[in-house]
Image (cartoon, rainbow, N blue to C red; front, side, top):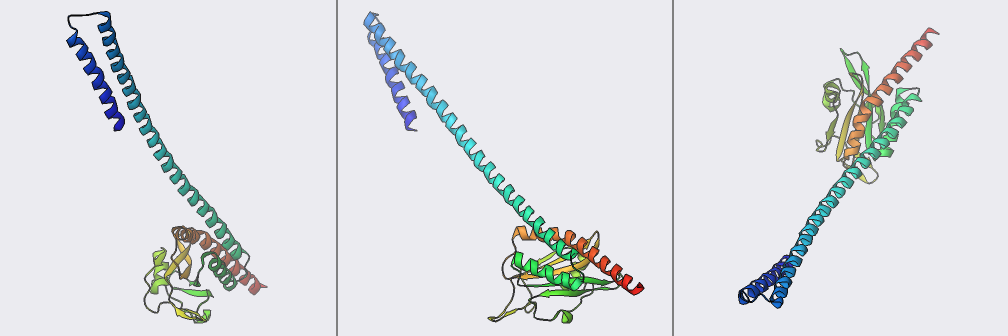
Length: 260
């Protein structure tokens, strides 16, 4: 703004000098007058050229400022993409480790226990139950095969039918359920310091194609992050398929023992 006022001032002075010279010496066009007119024209030309540079410079500055903002925007987007990529790589590594635990197990009970231990370590889970489908589609229940830091023994945990209770409803809907407002007394975390109620619970159906073969119920005292929710979604199918293969392997081994 100051530069514009200064340019206008110089332009006004040059124009005033030119008009004054022309008016006072309109009848006397001597060499001195010609020099004064030329000087006035030079002042006006200099002001004009300076103005062109100033406005061009402002335009270039604005373009540079816009380019800087675009670079910052692109950098932010790139940072977010990099964070998503790192989260995806971490999810794949964790999922691969869980699948390896299932593949290396000889029973559903040992597999369920090891998976919960691994997830507790990776995700700071304070309590968890691993349910496996038993029975046919006409009549099936989801029986607990493993538990982590649970206040009941695995054998005493209820085996909900499909559509009954939150676990049964998730199995029926085939959709993950994340709860951040738990019913009073739904789950209690018991430690040497006393009792507390988790802040969040995720109930995850484990699917093989269109069939729910198991359900994970995971509780935590912290809030699940967006990356962890995406990880749970990824686990639904990968862990579900590995659980299906383990169940089939156990059936084959059991049948072979009976035949032998």
